[in-house]
Length: 347
Image 1 (cartoon, helix red, strand yellow):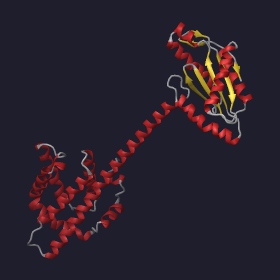
Image 2 (cartoon, one colour; image 1 turned 120 degrees about the vertical axis):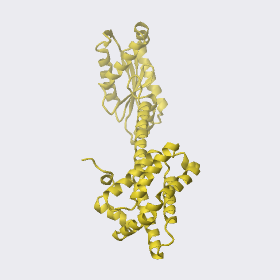
Image 3 (cartoon, helix red, strand yellow; image 1 turned 135 degrees about the vertical axis):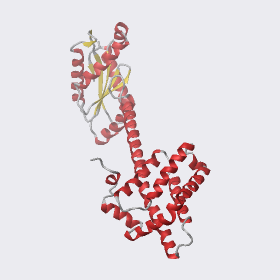
Image 4 (cartoon, helix red, strand yellow; image 1 turned 90 degrees about the vertical axis):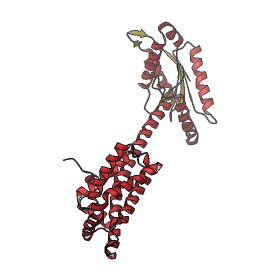
């Protein structure tokens, strides 16, 4: 069985009674509902509807939501049906359901809530203005109070769904924005070609980890790793093959470092590795494993075997180090490895 709006918004028997109590409606008001229909709605509903739409069409803020002649006639017909049910069996589920549906319709067309409330107030005034002057004063006063209470109830129910949909839409927008933010953040953190961390992210990590290592007097190591003769790979096989080789190298590096260690693309075919809370002896062993793993077998790129080696330099944080001095030292060591024949690690 499909859930109703009353189910969704908690308007079972108890929920409906609570809402009626808020607006001061009781069983005694059902006689006033009959009086409203006998003296006002049955006799003057068409007059009320005509005046209602004449006023709305005269206001630029509301006329844009009403549409052309055909739409106006459809709205008048629907509004007449609404008046014909106003206050009838107001404690029943079907009454609440109809009013909750109205809020959904108005939210769907984008009618601002302020104009929505103003329209209810206008209808309330028109109903009161058509109360026959010949009624006994007590009946007239009671009928005015009933119109205020029943229109307040109807407006509250329509506002419940209107507001709920607005909140749902806002929540959906926030979730969507967060998702986009996460995707953008991921793009900033990751090198799109290789899947390694981006240079920007590497700098963020170093800005956090270097002061921490100096403060705690712990060792942090960084390594610069560069592919040997990478230009020849691009020249001989093309840049698309070169791109695949870079991806393969990153994959092999990740296979030999821990999840706490970070590899990022520093630029071109250069990669920077960060080893938090790691002694130099351990970092050297890790870099040697990386170097051996890369050189152990050629990479298969579209059935083309490409042999690759890397040269690297690894160093440890020292007192008074800056990010620039730390990277420069690792970079210089990497060039020493290049000058000593490549496919080696210097520390």
